[in-house]
Image (cartoon, rainbow, N blue to C red; front, side, top):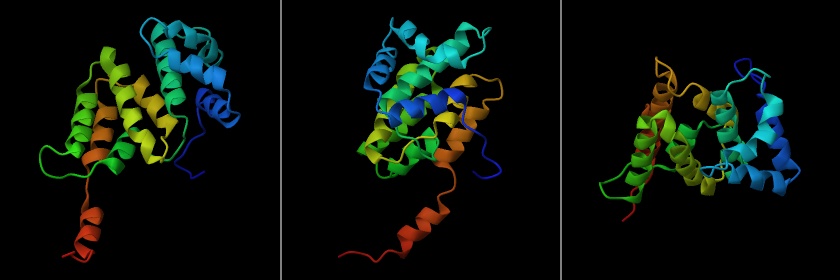
Length: 178
């Protein structure tokens, strides 16, 4: 653990333990909690990790994170924005990669109430890459999504569209194919 890293949130640690011991029943219940009207099913898993005076929003945030984790229980070092960037290759208009950028733009513009559907799509896009997601980072992003300073959205925008100098240099150094 580097000095700038912090310990995982106890909920994230617990979710990772579910995946490690392949607790399929609990993970299935958490996936179900992502469906509209089934959010309460995730409460039995997340409530032990919240303070007794946590409000509904904190409960909903934890259930959303747990449900997303259950979709793709792979941990990694990348924020969701970095994971999306790793599968996005900017190219000409109309390519499949434009849909990745489009999904990311829709995610950044999403109202809090629409966040679950946009995050679900984004997590599903990253699953085939196998890189994993930093679930603590995603939990923080969910919790502070609509903060007045927009620090989460700006951090993710920098992670997705930020400097590509090193990537572009490596592409330029590759031999041309005939």
